Length: 224
Image (cartoon, rainbow, N blue to C red; front, side, top):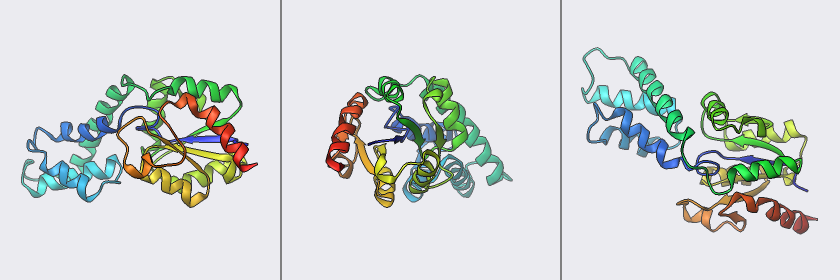
């Protein structure tokens, strides 16, 4: 029996993967018109959170003498992070949800399944986005970039008093899959977006989140 579900956020509940990447280029464009600094940061630190990425962007801009003389990495990193958070919040609040997201959250809640978020977004901005999208009430707790996907799943197991084989992690990125594998819980790939082949080949996948209850019945029957 599936007791709880942990959802990734970007690309799983909201169609926001491209939005987040493009926003880094947008906030740095006045000084990095070619986008080279941001592209380099993405290439070298793809898994860094927004604060580390904006700090690295500020460092790259200063090293290339694209910012005023005497600029500090800390102050410019904080400024860029603030600009990024504001712009992303405004954009993602009104961006499209992934197919069936709202209905799936409602259906699973009505079935008594405990819902969690397990995202690479820092907890503070993540909670704000859930509130703005009117989804916060669906979730028992929110876990973000402050820990790994696997560590978050372990915390979810403790909070929900669920065994790992009673937990499903729904995501669209390799780190979502790795987290589930490290914890030996079920993984369901959200395959409606432009996902990488390893995710597309997952034995359990959906292109509409409303398919999840039926899929969970299948999982329960196969593991009974």
